[in-house]
Length: 155
Ligand code: MG
Image (cartoon, rainbow, N blue to C red):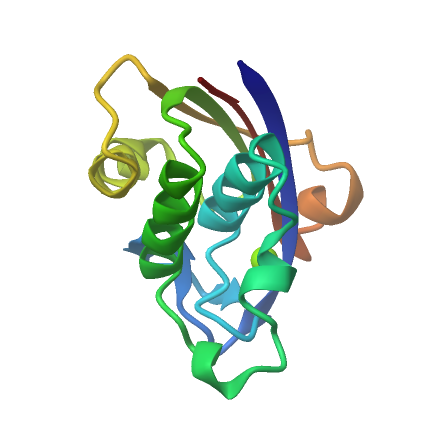
């Protein structure tokens, strides 16, 4: 049994779509990044790679590689799932926390879960997805960015 943790942050800027867990959320600002900047999915990938001792997403999908410009993070996640399978691991569970002052993401959580469950090939009960604010404190509180944590257990 192997535990893994992933953490990621992206900056909020005008003129970018806000994509979280593969869901496009209407919002005046979106996350800046080389890929689609889906911070939630990035934290999930880093947790999986961490548990399998396979490094991090920067190693597998370098942010200076034009191949990953605007990349769909759910597709990258599919690649990570294949990598951990090749090492003989299966996912026992994942617990994910999104940290954002705004927008309120609760209405989108079922869709995000559906997307992630499909790519991870896990069932309801193996993936927990939750969101919190930091009470107006820090960079998330000032709406300068959004962060996400993920922990996973592989068997
Ligand atoms: Mg990232």
